[in-house]
Length: 65
Image (cartoon, rainbow, N blue to C red):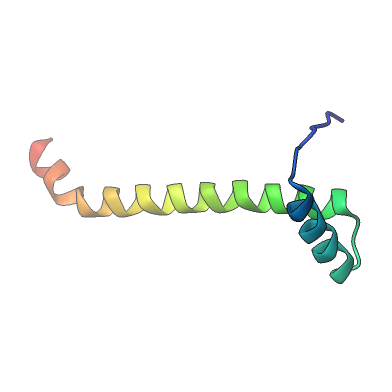
């Protein structure tokens, strides 16, 4: 499995550790899941916006076809 090095300020790393401990998880697992969740949310938002554009332009597209 590929790895990734991330850099945090001391304050950011302390906050990350606190959150991971509060959830009973390792810092690595917490950070991994946070990144994956951010990617999934971005994809969800993109596809939602694309659906809105498609629906909003459906009538115009029909008339132009």
